[in-house]
Length: 82
Image (cartoon, rainbow, N blue to C red):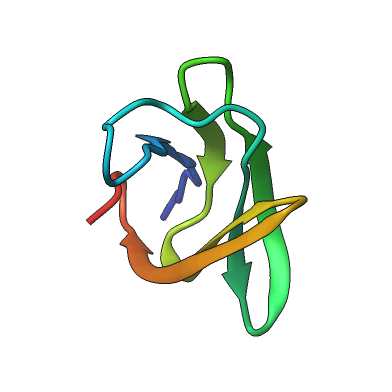
């Protein structure tokens, strides 16, 4: 008998001001797959975010603040963010 177990990875990170290094609160971090939001989270007061149970695959991470748009990044998830 062949059994397969699906598990999700955790993607976490820290969104910071590139000049000061300070964390940025209130950023919506979205993991996009085929131009659709697959997962999203919002940064806390220190700029940290965490998305749990992310399926394996390639995603484009986008970062958005109501008053700004930040540059997207490409990431792959296979048990951890690469």
